[in-house]
Length: 378
Image (cartoon, rainbow, N blue to C red; front, side):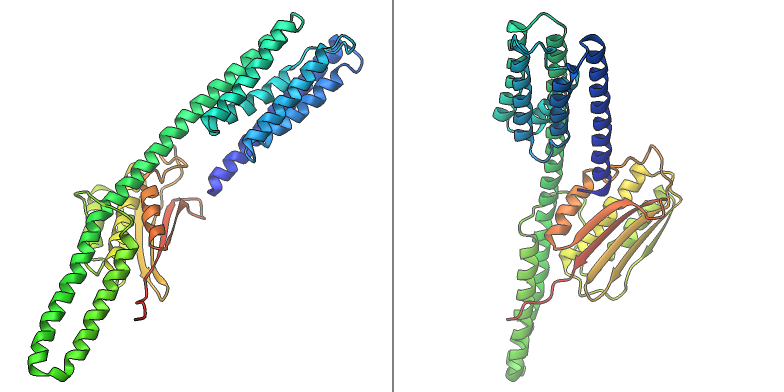
């Protein structure tokens, strides 16, 4: 979970907790004013328990909902006993907690479990209407139950669409890598073919040097196997292809195209990087392409963009930063689904990708690290 998502959940739970406290306080005041004495205590205690379960719902959605329904059912049963003479339950505060638990279950649980929990809540309301005293309590409970179910269904539909969109991006990224796999294999096989032809010439002129040529062919074959293992699980099929040459030479043209549409963009990349595997080169290209596209979409007011590609002993680091100030044009989810596909590709290659606001608060940063595979011993 990213830091913004974590803080969003904390803020949501804090707001919900404040709402629960307000509902319990209002319920206590109303019962103390109308019923008097200690009549408010049982309902308030039960409401606090149910609301507490609602705040802990993300840890275990099934059992928190079941426990909340059990507490509500017990409270309703005790309230229906002639000897208790207590206010009707569930009160508004408890009904609010039950609505959150029901909505959470409907949103996230498997259909059968979600339906069972929602049905149990509806059954309690029907029982209260059938055998309980005539009052507004069952109507309030029914309204909150309906609101909880409706909110849960709406969020379930939204989550399903988001997952479908993310899956579509991942499939597109796999499809996009299919042709890259073809290019990588062709690149290595072409080198092996040239080396084998050279070995035939060497065999005729200097037979004692054939061994060295065979070692080079073996090394090329090993490199091809390493590259294939790193991308064989992904597929690709698009027209906008990244370069598969062993140097990031296509970045210059990409940056120049971007500079014609946007602000000043600067590229810093290493020279003499002929040992980069093709799958790393193409991934670097695609990351820069996606990051620049996001700048065009979400930060058109940025004055400058810096693209930095660096190579050290551990691998390749790519960072794209801009200086755009925060604005409504730059939502918290600015990375969008494009970066989901990039993260899929980067993690397949054993790397990491992070995207978010810069530490200074001004601008956005996309940073990726990609390891350069070492040749496997033979």
